Length: 205
Ligand SMILES: [Ca+2]
Figure 1 (cartoon, helix red, strand yellow):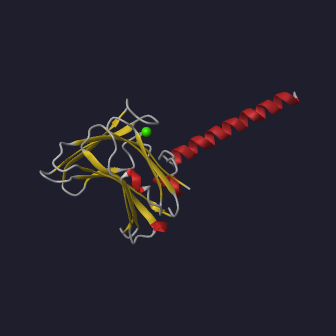
Figure 2 (tube, rainbow, N blue to C red):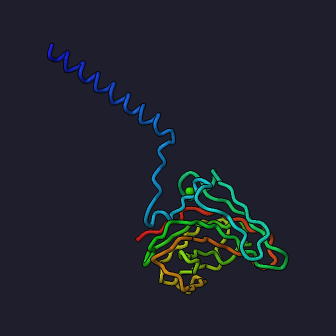
Figure 3 (cartoon, protein in one colour):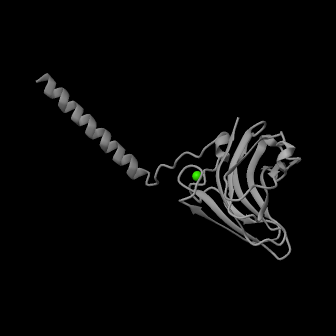
């Protein structure tokens, strides 16, 4: 008998909890949002969806487009496949722009996978900007061979080895207040449209 009462109590409790959950759901029709990543991980970009970044035409670029490639990725479910084109006789710059909450990137390591799909791209880079729009840092590798995945790796405040054909510029921006990451590439002068895959951008300490 005691056991049966206990069972009945548990049933009632279960019902109450289910009802409470149903009421809570009815009171709040918005689906629970996934909490936004905070800290350095907010800068990461897996390129498994088109959310979280924008593809922009930079200097002298007349076309910059991107779509997910679900067949050829370095990691996860997809990579970003981009195509960009310059106005005649120029170096057209394409930018993949990611905006983030103010983040301290002092001394952080960053890495990015890139696979050029033709020889037309040049100066593959990662740039950080602060909340006032000032450049914090610009690091680039000039040449990456086509049809291979390359991982660009470096540390904020430390240039990549010069032997790789690299470029480094430190700006006036504050590395403790970074709000924008730009992954960029240019076209070689007078080249046909560039094409490349991008994947696995990560910032860690
Ligand atoms: Ca991916």
